[in-house]
Image (cartoon, rainbow, N blue to C red; front, side, top):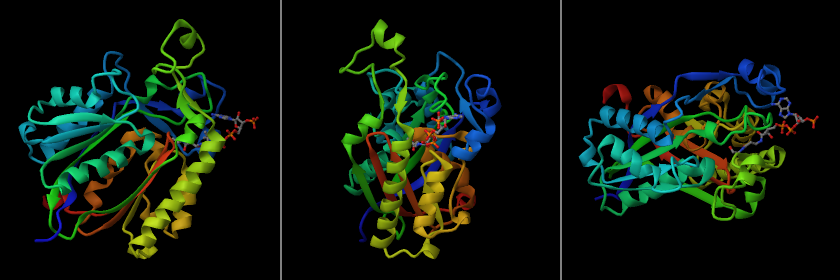
Length: 334
Ligand code: UT7
């Protein structure tokens, strides 16, 4: 029998309806549609307006769709991992809340925090559960209500982020497809340039931290940009070389959607064409851990069994990584 690999067997997602446009943003801060389109490449982002709903609501909607599309009952799920930087609460895990909302009862679930790389880290973690042979259905979720940690008076940050959630099912296969290789990296010294100053054990919430607006994303954009371009491009090229993939062997490249210029620079370094790159930044912005599953969800109908995909990401931590997988199904022939 061949080696057991983990394969993605379905994708679900959820996007809130409200569209925060550049035009609306330009009435909130000193910015313009031209600046945002030229420097970032985002036209609008989705926002979950309901104040009584958090990331777990978004994640549960995505998992509901995933279970329905893959014809899976909640009782069949063995593990659920949720990647998020906007958990509903400090504890318990948002993954636990999602499991409860969708009726997953025979599983264990936990959160994983790796910034924008959270989904890729969770995919790697879940794939190892599958490869070990003990678990048959592992759900990986990326769910973010970024609008709760974005300062809508900070023009350098507020255009970037949006809300959303995506989820995939991982199952074992001995076929020639599934997750074939991954390279993940962390450099904690990068935390200085991208973090949330207060609300953790180092600096608990207080009147002072609220007054100082320290519960929002703090980002030194130019420095993060430099590291994002260098690391995402390097690791994407490294995974191509390690797997002897020429640019023409690649069917699709799925880059994290933080900035159109980062995406273009990475694709150029890989030597691939625009037609090979999945891009939806214009519609959703950067949805942090939800970004990669949202790409898979949007392109699912165009994916064919055997397609070569590389997923790549860079985010807070710093965390970054790349994964090579062969797609395992044709959505229309399911
Ligand atoms: O997903 C997590 C990882 N995060 C990222 O990958 C984000 C990486 N960084 C970036 O994408 C970019 O650095 C930003 C989009 C955040 C900023 O773009 P930039 O081209 O690096 O701009 P900058 O920070 O160098 O600022 C250039 C100018 C500044 O004005 P001065 O000092 O030159 O007068 C800013 O104040 O642009 C100004 N600026 C704006 N102007 C209009 C910053 N934000 C805005 C804005 N509208 N929204």
